Amino acid sequence: MTRRNILKTALAAPPAALLADTPAGDRPCAASKPMKIRKVEALHLEQPLKERFWMANSLIGGYHPKASRLIVTIHTDAGITGHGEGGGGGANILRKGFADLVIGEDPFMVGRIWEKMFAVTYSREPSSRGWSQGEVISAMAPIDAAIYDIMAKSAGLPVYKFLGAYRDAVPAYVTGGYYREGKGIPDLVQEVRGYLDQGYNAIKLKVGGISGGYSVEDDYQRAKAVRQAIGPHCRLMLDANQGWDLESAIRASNRMYDLDITWLEEPLRWYDDVEPLKQLKLNTRIPLASGEHELTRWGARRLMETGAIDVMQYDCNAHCGITEWRKIAGMASMCYIKMAPHHEPVLHGHLLASVPNGYILESFANPDRDPFFFELYDRKPRIEKSVLYLDNTPGFGVEFNQKALAKYGTKVL
Ligand SMILES: [Mg+2]
Image 1 (cartoon, helix red, strand yellow):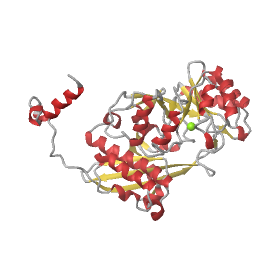
Image 2: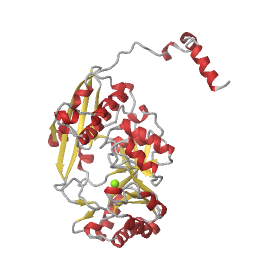
Image 3: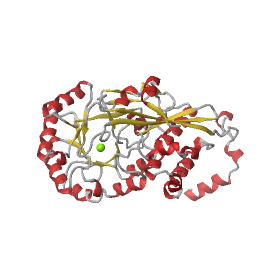
Image 4: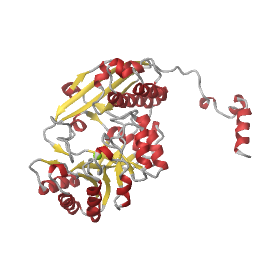
């Protein structure tokens, strides 16, 4: 039978006949009442960092370094409440009515809600209401995540299973090896030994600091010291944070090759960091990673279409939310690109567990660098020996520490 005939037969069959052998409990129930979003609350959290952590050209947390977070809580008329976390951006537009867009919507119509929010970015609304496009992209992330939390809780499932899970444990690496003022290679080696002591078997080191006085050779010596300290069986990734021009990136990637580098991340300067990746790809044997700065799936598509990246790092904690991440992961799988999203292990852990091309999760081991990851939760997915474990708790499986919320949070909505 041809595919067309199969479809014809299926369409011709009356619904009652299709259900003839189906137990009553398995039959679709049209009686369930659509849920509605009743209220949105938001909390903006901020705390200063104790130390200055330099990437290639810029500081973690800005000129006055601080950690920030935006937690959106969405209440429904069914009594189910969802929480979504974002990187901190977007609080301003929540104060100016952006969250009204989702009031009255059915959270299970998340595709429609997402499009409604995104449509703002190509309309007059930002100009007429004092919203910026960037803030819309940022605010969409925690709102979309909170909606997935609601849907998963409503189904009684953890988010990764609600999305159609592929695994329940995800490999994790630790990011460290920042340029730290007054600290040299012995301090760097001591730091990475601390990660090994915590059981990590994959470590990412910052490179690319030419504008801070670190030549390619200086970075090679730093990376070499780290490789010697961690031994041959620990993965080592390098993140240049857009610090190099093309020539330096080619030179650096070849110099670093003997250190068995798992990937080189964001090697090229911000103003032209996509097209020249093709030239870099032709001149390096190290896999390339990028994508944490992409705002949408169209930007991510442009990056993947270069054929130059092996690892896609789209961050749906910062941009656009889970709905967009899943589309990008789908295209990545068709391009044989693995997903290794930037930051926020709680959210991205569920997503990596839900796709076959989920590669490895970024995580943190230094409370001075990422204090909220350590202070914000009474309960969160467990990371042990470089693996994040997910359980069957409905939703994201987190419980916030109320004292931390009170201490660092400012009510936005
Ligand atoms: Mg990075």
